[in-house]
Image 1 (spheres, rainbow, N blue to C red):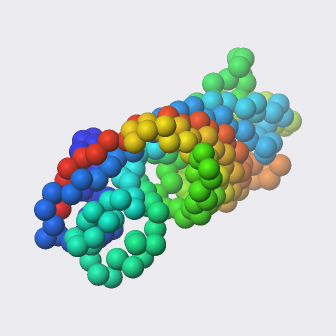
Image 2 (image 1 turned 90 degrees about the vertical axis):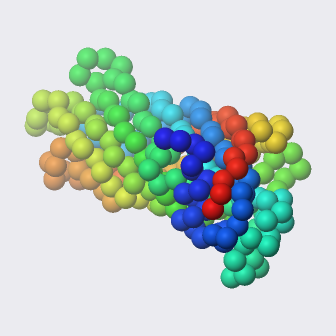
Length: 227
């Protein structure tokens, strides 16, 4: 995927800039870091311990400076709203936000491998003296392949293909070291429509929530795009 084309898709999809505009410089934020996941639900007789993964954060950033610089290129219907906005981050639908890698600790132990997409969200930013705090919620879609060691009546290891829409509640603290480098740490709690393991119909062994803690290193760079 060509990162230089990402801002075009972002801005064109949302109609923020007029199509008659010349080259527009849009910052792209690329973030990568580890995530730690925990599943409070009972998926099998032995509990699933916390496991690691990766979080990906690739977005076009529309900040206050950019809005002021290209004010004449923004359609009139968007100007008042954007002038009151400190920063807008627009993601790309087909890039997953999270990759889960729950490797079994022993033979026959539980494992989980999955991805999540978070295409739409709302955040409330709070400017602190040394960082920026954001609290919000996102719509998400998760697919995970989960292997469990069975139940009391069936000891055979089974595979569940978990695929569910959901909603997460999240908070994040962002530190800006320079115009190009940032660091953020956050937590999220995701809720899903419950799904029983291996379609057993036993609600005792089902998944409907996942907790996450994450740390992300961001690199931000400008890209010139003609829209």
